[in-house]
Length: 339
Length: 184
Image (cartoon, rainbow over the protein chains, first blue to last red):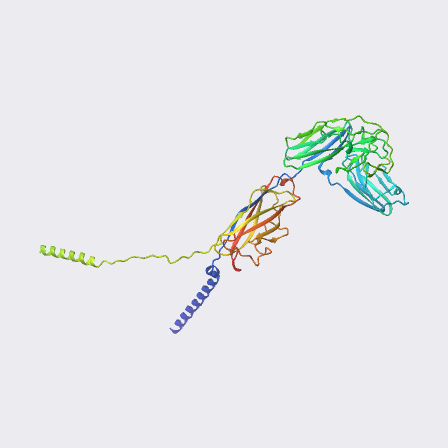
């Protein structure tokens, strides 16, 4: 009897401890929630809206067709294509050139006037066919930048520069590979692409004879020459603008090109003298009417700008003093000694 | 005998009615307001300062502002996150990033971020946007958040004519280090 009682008692005690422990455990588990409820929450609201506008300027490809030869120029990629290289001592470097257009316009600047005898010539520029520019150091008069125009030859892919200098260096910048020369037979076609209708306006039809501004006096003073610079402006509905500056020169046949003149788009100008068979040609006006065309559909739109000869060509003979001549505002400009 | 019975019943009835009337009590319950208690709340209102569509071009920046007003009854700590959506869901939300973030707590704008940051990242309202030394937004107080964003300059034409919406998700909690942030 005693034993049973003792046994019962111990069992009863065991249950009590377990219960207490379980209660304490549960109390600890639920304690944070039971002792304190926190206030918190989330709110969401629309706070801004941005719209990405039409930010792409119209793209255009201008195609000039002269007889069977066709030049095309991507208006939008014609910007910021300047390549620069520097040569010191005896060095040879090459650049890739586009033969899509007939010229590569370079700017050459010597670090110091190499007016003493060195290995002559001190700079030779050559294409795949022959030497296109040979500079004698004794002829170099200054450290100003000089513009030279190098013809591109069909099939040519590089233009090489070979220097023979001592301590001097020469920097060469490719200013343009997008100068075209057109003739009376040139047909100009413009392919425009954009996501909205584009207004194409051109100074080609609005050009007036500027007179003194573009009158050039050759250094030998034999005859004035005139050059025209035109532009085609493309504007889409969002106001994005592409502008293509076109220097217009008459030339019966590009193959007969000897010298031509070149005008910087910023208003500065250099000689780029055209001579064909001893004849000098006046500029040609293109599209005598106001040239404004509105494309009504998106995608590609093409039109043609008819060309009208403005003046009869005048013939005269010009004497050149290679490698540099002086233009009307005192710039010395290199011309090609041989093509 | 019958008469006796009738008289006895009448006397008893008369007695019962008389005694009941005498024993009636007057009782009532009186209620009077002694004051009340209200639970605290942590409510905030998030408002856009201006939601009109603004143009943003590649490489360009644009600002937007929104306010957070504590309309609750206790001071709160605040964190925020921005959810972004292009009108074309295939476009990259990260094409728009944050350039700077500043908060006006009442004494002028104070810069939190002045370096590029992901818009969908969580930021806390404290000196450096970190979860320490959080600022307190008092009841009735309002903060203005100013975010400057930039559209990546390398985005393609597929981003043209698309719109980009920003929603602010603001989480608040009672002040106190042990107080957890809301989970949703």
